[in-house]
Length: 444
Image (cartoon, rainbow, N blue to C red; front, side, top):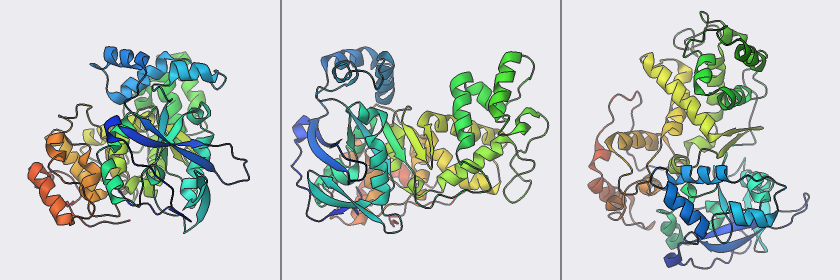
């Protein structure tokens, strides 16, 4: 677990967690005027303290649903809005006797060295502008307005205590996998308009609308990866034309769209909606967030209703995963694109497509291990030990029990233990266009 760059004028007073009760620390927002510094308080709760109603629901659904899909199914059974009384939220929506929680997944570090002050349990704490911005948004989010708490690694782990950091290494998967929702925060101060696309995210939002209203097949059709026979469903055709007419008219031309392979340096011929979607993905994937090693497992286990925040746009994680699946399948059918833009977005698409099973003893097969190895080699972390620790929760206990989690150990010792348990990690990947290594070097 990366040591936080967030600091306090005096240390936050953390209590030890009760491991036998599966305790975690969560943050709650206190009433804060918009012109004042954020104020939060820490609470200590057990992830074993499920409500009986949820346990009954889980026992009925568990054989067929993963943890994240179980959470989604629980949400669907409960109709609630911001007008729903708190008592009804606590009774019908919250899964734990103490309430419920969400997680924040974000990029560490400062935005050009800028800092802000927030208060945790009354203690002034210096945090990055990026984290402060994320917290302000989460405070007004749907879940927190319903009274839910928040988990984020920088403040819910005692970053000054190597033992506490190490104790959370194997818990990140469960903390994110059991969260009611996850907020993926990719925003940065230096976001710019690129290639005249304004506002960035417009085409991705269009994809989400089409996916929600008409399904994956229609999205494939307007992205030009499947042929659509216009006129076969006149009413639907008119509705789709209305949706996209201000975005990209070339979507309607079945014989005139770019394959995004070899037309020019970026792979463009005449721009098609698919090309514009790829440009927006390229802009989004260039944010620092997408290069973090720890997000591999955070995203892999997050529920599909989690949200991704980029500039002023918000998408569901499920939308981006569906787009990734469509584009990757299309690329394979065309024997892999060689365009420059494809080389830029492919790592991000691979990351979105990566997922794991809930079965802690059979999480990764050999193919998944090869995928994970490539993803990890592309990613950055600040501590060399995290080259292994950031991924360890995805492996069964037969692997994780062999690796001693201690940030004071030599990185070479950590990698030796890991590769003795996972010898496939040393086998070079076949067929990937990028040269990757297992390197223990770390980058911030």
